[in-house]
Length: 186
Image (cartoon, rainbow, N blue to C red; front, side, top):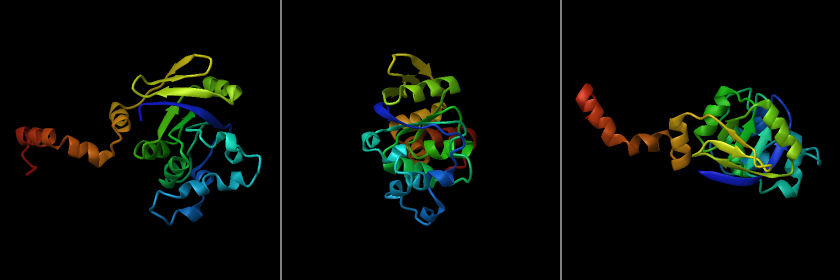
């Protein structure tokens, strides 16, 4: 993931917990494929819910309210979002566990000020651009908004690496460091 230019899909609610994102009935699987069908299942019971609107089906950027991903620590929530096709979630704040689970699963959570998120809600429908290398979000009105991300997580997202891929890619340097400082790795 480097640069994403996409239609947005907005769910202007605060405190969207992981049970709303993916209900417990989907938690018995360890397969990430197919979880998109359960994404926001209770909310999708309302035929007017935005995820039921075909014009938003190709959206890769979800915009939501404060405290997105709160509740239990189910990794299935980012799996379901990714399976649906969402690559980025923009919100004023995220639950820490959801944020960490997301980045480990190639889903970029971007915290922007609430004022900016409200502005995005008002622009909907629109397309925006997320540039991960530059750490900026460019709105349709050409305004640019910087976001923060841990350098390690940024590299993993750009290179599409999980934690083990990253370690194996750097194994020679790790072994050299260990050899020089402690000598535990054989």
